[in-house]
Length: 217
Image 1 (cartoon, rainbow, N blue to C red):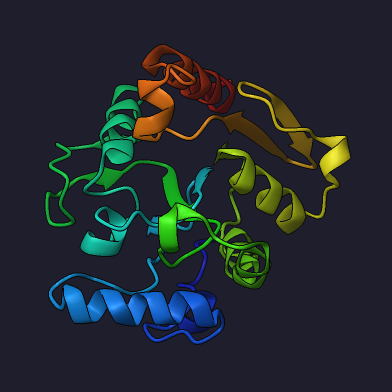
Image 2 (cartoon, rainbow, N blue to C red):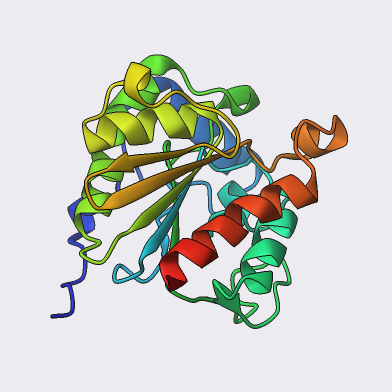
């Protein structure tokens, strides 16, 4: 049976007040760039997907500007190229939300839905926003795989799944099980990580190659 659309409360409202520091930062961004999205960024993709990708938070000039996860910054260039390569997306990624790109059996979300100063959400903000990640997971009846991009996404996803950090430590390429769901870890596909070779495109592709193989088996 197809899942019902998520109620609006499953995503934070445009003027979500739950994290005062992020709300103030959002107000400053709106004053500076009134034509940008400058609001919590909703999940992208079908709730019936088997794969969920969890990032850290919207980038200031990426998703915070465009309104679509990982759209408009370097991290999106690598992520969407990889999704296209492994059949989790179709179309052409042109770094804008109206480029027509579609996800295939895949959904993308973030541990924190609002852009944080210096791309660094506070622990309290991560904890507060986790309710939306929990609800996102709850709306995905066919979910079998989650890719966590970075340690913060990994830790918040573990808590959303009810797992202890000690039982599933973060490591690039690691795979953990939570009942019927597998959690795959990757370093975040940020420009910093790729420029410093902490993460290479090959390392990133290897994670999604494993996901593809497991979902197809």
